[in-house]
Length: 502
Image (cartoon, rainbow, N blue to C red; front, top):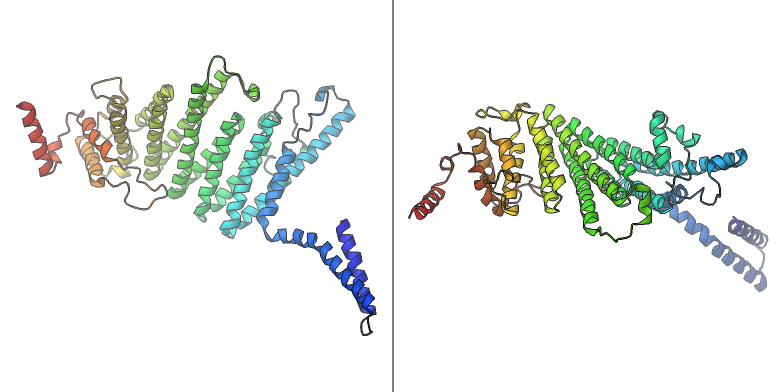
């Protein structure tokens, strides 16, 4: 403001001087003074011009708003106080409550301003500003998770009460008292506000602006991964609930492109939780010191149990949405969910997480037991929700082939994972087995045929894995390869049998 006043005074004096000498002869001294005043005014004006030019780039402005909001959100308001809230006088308690109310009001305003900017850009389909706005909201959330843990706001010594400013906000006014209390104890209200805004943007973009779906779902994954890294399980569980919500919306609306995008990010988040658990198990040593920041989340065993529970909860949700997709006739989505569950089974086995791997197979078995295995000749089973779709059968068969190829599972070993899959599918009719075999044969060695968001065909099977597909299908005694072999393949098979005989 002082710079603006100096500019105003100098500019006014210069203008008055110019008006007084207009039409009259100006002396050299007067002209020099006038010139100096104008140059001084210009120099003083430069910071003001630079400040105005910043408004031409809205992203920078809202980034500053977000940074200020995060700084205030993680400000340790009670760190400097020697007493707990209960030990303070009534006056001190009221002053603290007023300070918290102002603090929380600024945080809410920051989130609302960024959200308004982003939502408006989404409605206008302004990719540049919409994507930057989504990234800013996600960065706000992740920065808060990191900053809150670093400042140890969750200390049991101080409870940051939710003020009336927050409780009367539109995103909180309908919440139950129990959930509000839970958010108060874990400082979860900031995450709730941000995630609710992202959910609104997802709903606005769904079906109308699918390019924004990837940005938003990827943002959910980054928030989930940050919460896992910082051991903020309250935020991780809350983010997973929102992940479930957007996956359910895509499934019910049968927007398969958006659903597949969300599903892939969901799978990446679950893989990250397994990787974090595996890393923690490998790094643990009897004498290794514990991170002091882990104290609030329990001991190391408790942390590992929570990571495992987070992954298993996610697996249960995926199985649930596969059942929903099948029940409403969204076969495509059901097939892709089961494919990703199979991918997670392979991922857990590669990392040596035996317990999690067996639990994933349990989820697959539970899903299969909810529907009838097609044990009759094919009769347009794609439209029959009471029978497993072909894509689900292909995913399970592919999983068994990978077990045999990569992990040396034997079909003679009844404790192997490949044998367990055989037990799930042993009642398959011969026509279905033949169809699965022909599906994989038809795909050849190509990784994918068409352009997809994943860049690969989920049903693709490499030549390395395809060699063991025959091994798995041979376990079905009723399946005769001679019915579907080419002349060359038949000759090769007979030559092999003849060689073994001689």
